[in-house]
Image 1: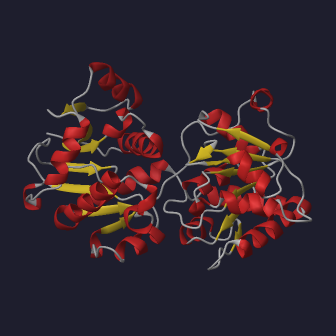
Image 2 (image 1 turned 90 degrees about the horizontal axis):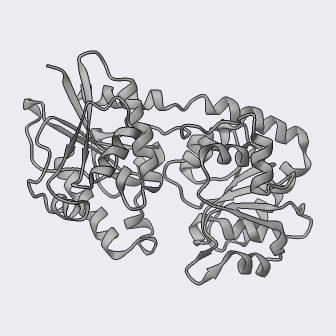
Image 3 (image 1 turned 120 degrees about the vertical axis):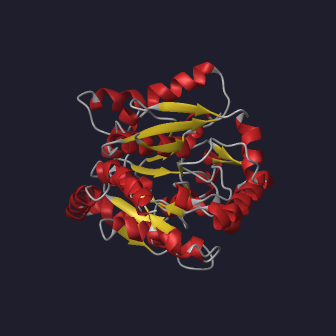
Length: 380
C-alpha cells in the first residue's frame, strides 16, 4: 500500500487565488513530480461545484485522488479555526498555508500535519488586513503552535520574524520558492512588448501605494533632480484606498506620461516585462518570501532592492542593495535615486548585475522545494 501525502490545495479554487494560489499550484506540482517510489499525492479541497474539482485536476496532473470535505470553504475555515473534527482524517497532511486541519493527533500512528506561514502581517501590519483575516491568522498560528508537527517558511528572514512571535523551535523549516512556470522569453517577445506598450528603456516596480511597499519612495526618487527621466512600469492596481497612482506620481514630480501601469499578466508577458527592464526596483520596507526577486533574477534583470532581511537573503549580493533606514522616508528616496542613477548611467554595472542575477537564479527551483517537502515528512 503506497504512502500517501495529502496536500491542501483549496486555494486553487478560492475566489481570488492570488500569490498563495500560485504557490500552491507550483509546490504541489513539484511534490507530484518528486514523488518517491511507493508513494502518492492526493489533494484536499472544500466542498465545491464539480467544475472547480475539474480545474484542480487539470492544474495538477498526476494527483492520485481528490478528497472533498463536507463543508464549503468559508464554513471549513471557521471549523478548522475552532479545531472541529471536520477533516480528511489522519495520515500525512501538508498545508500550503495555515488553512489545514490542526488538531491533536498521534504521530506514532503515522499522522502528521505540516503548515506553511507566508507572512506575519497580522502582527507587523494588521492595518493591511481585515479584522477577520487578522483574527483568523492569529487563531490558526496559535493552533499550529499546539498541533503542527512542522511549520514551513520561505526564508530564514521570515523564520526569525516568526520566532519572535511564536517559538516553534526545531519544528520550523525553511523551504524556498522559485519562479512561476512559463516565465521564459519566447520568440514572440518583441510582439508582446509592442502589445503591452513597453518603452525601449524603463524601470520596473511591483506593488501598491501602501507605504510599506515602497512604491511611493520610488516615485519620490524619480522626482529628484538629476535622476534620469526613465519611464516607470508599475505592476499593480491604479489606486490604494483614496490614493491614486497618477496623482501621487505628479505630487512627487513624475509626469503621468512616464507611467505605464500593467496588471494580471500571464507568465509569458511578465517574462517580457522583466527581461526588457533597464532595472527592476524592489523597494519594500519589509518582505517575507523574496519570490519577486527570484523571478527578476531568472530573467537576468539588474535588480535594485531594499535591505529588507528577506531581500538580502535572496539576493546574496546579486543585486544593488539600498538601506531603508529609520525615521522618515526622504533618506531612502535619496538613496534609491542614487542607485537608480548609477544603474541607468553605468552600463558596465548594469551588465554585471544582469550576470550576477542570472547566476543567483540557479539557486532556486521548485524541484528542490518538492524534494525538501518529501524529506521533511520523511524526517517526521
